[in-house]
Amino acid sequence: MHYLRNLLLFIVSLFLLAGALNAFVDPYGFYWSPTFEGFNARKTQADERVREVTPYRALELQPDTLLIGSSRVQLGFAAESDSFGERSVFNLALPGSGLTENLKYALLHVKQNPNLRTLIIGVDYRYFLNNYGNDPGPWTTQQLMDKYNKNPETTVEKIQRIYPALFSLDTLQDSFATVIQQRGLYNHITRLGSNTGDYYLATIKAEGKQRFFTHQQSGVQQRFEREQYRYRGEHGLFGIGMYQTFIDELVAKHPNVTLYTFINPYHQSYWRVIKQTGHWPDYLQWKRDLAALADMYPQFPFYDFSLPSVETLEDPDYAKNREPMVWFWEPAHYRPAMGDRIIETMFASEQENADWPIRLTGNNINRAIAQSEAGLSAKLTGLD
Image 1 (cartoon, one colour):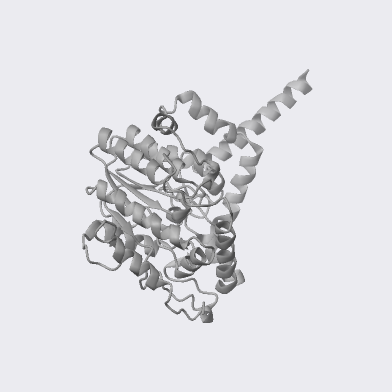
Image 2: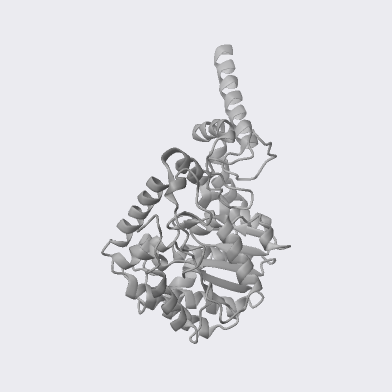
């Protein structure tokens, strides 16, 4: 009996010790226990749990400004940046997310965060393609709002979400990995939800920029070549219709919240893939549809950053093959320097006649289309 009791005490002790270590290291950033530089400050394993962590962290912090989007926004904005001034900001962008998921979380936080005053949403052409994210719709308005509506998390739900991982051997393994990886180049999620992109730096350093850039561009092309990915502007409450329903809900029930919508900046090589895969006419029509939507809500600015500029026409400069680009990680993802430029421009500029970005309206859309067409013809040493 003593043997069994001692064995049981030993097992329970190990169990509690593992839980205590996991709670202290907090590898996924569930609760941001005290952090120590060089030990657990960099949450290198949090990438795997962003959907279990990020939306709830934002609710706990109750920021006045939220960044919404896919991995482009997650990697492209540092919520800690001085460009936001005195705003309290959280990066709620989720890798691989589609339009429905983004808008669901945006409305969830609008309803449950009384401090929220600003929503900044980065949109992609791919968001609006039929079957993107395996969540195509169309829905009735009620079905769509049912997707958006979610009650606040209960204590029981929070325990079910967090504490099984606390006593998991997988979490223990990730805790050790977190400690070991503190001084290496690994992606990690910051306290305010942004992704540092250190993996990109490590890859460029190891493989060279040219190989990495070309590989990523090939992946973009394969995605756009999928036959089921087609733009359907008339597809009911899907795409443009879904975004309109979201804005209507915002205007009717949350008038204190200001919405900024921007088309994510793509590198010129990304536009070339859109052209080569036959999406260019639909891509331009999508911009026209966004401009028409912007005309319906003049109080909410829509900006097009996917236009030729010093930033989007950045030469990859393969002669410096081990050095990252200034504005882009690769064709589809931009760096925080670009995110800062976006924020500074949107918050400070109302110039109707600027060439980059262009504020989308019915009056400006033809200029945006002409600029889009002109951007394809620019010559870049690394690509031509």
